[in-house]
Length: 252
Image (tube, rainbow, N blue to C red; front, side, top):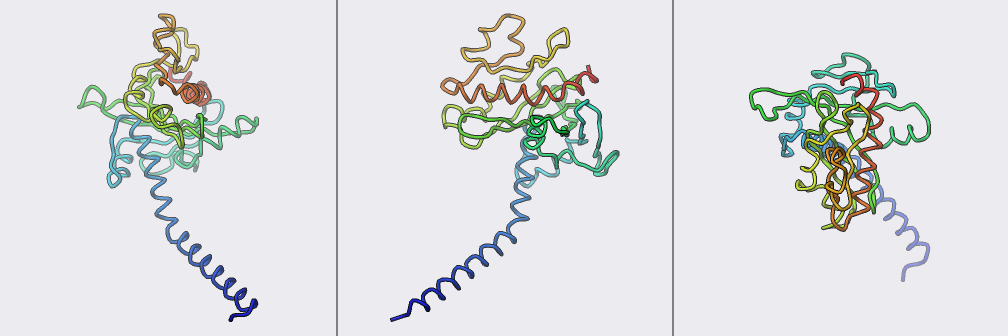
């Protein structure tokens, strides 16, 4: 029969031993975890410019098609630029700027930075590459966060591609935001009206055809049964894209 002191000492040693093993395993696996997070982020950016990438090809394709990373201040000025593997200006890569954190800083009235990616990708003309800007997105859905990327034309007005994902939206309903039938609706939609006023793109309950003729170019159909998630996507697009208006005005 073991004494209480023995049992307590044995349990303490086992807890310490297991904790040490788990801590060591976490440290050893952290580089792999960081790499997977990096690859997931790159795949989202590439998907927004209509480049499909398998895990092993993601980094080479990202380096080929995403030619520059810009970091902007709230006035739309470039404060850091990373091009062809080196800094042209500043010392912060857009890839390292967390959009969620920057949105929080903006909400608190503090200084913030905006990440922006510049892609050179083939569109309709396979022999010619077009310049696109990719804006990272972050917002809230029904059950958790939403995120993604939106690619826009060189004049920052026409949507050329999108990528959306989520943490825990309802399968078959809100989770449909990460399917191609939903995302393809955004192609060709406009962010500004003909007068240059920021409008964004709205996910419309009842369908974009319920909008006026002049507003249909700014609308897509909401997901049936996914009203709150659809509203979350609309709000995410508005909140994020609006921050880039000062930069966009320089491109129009």
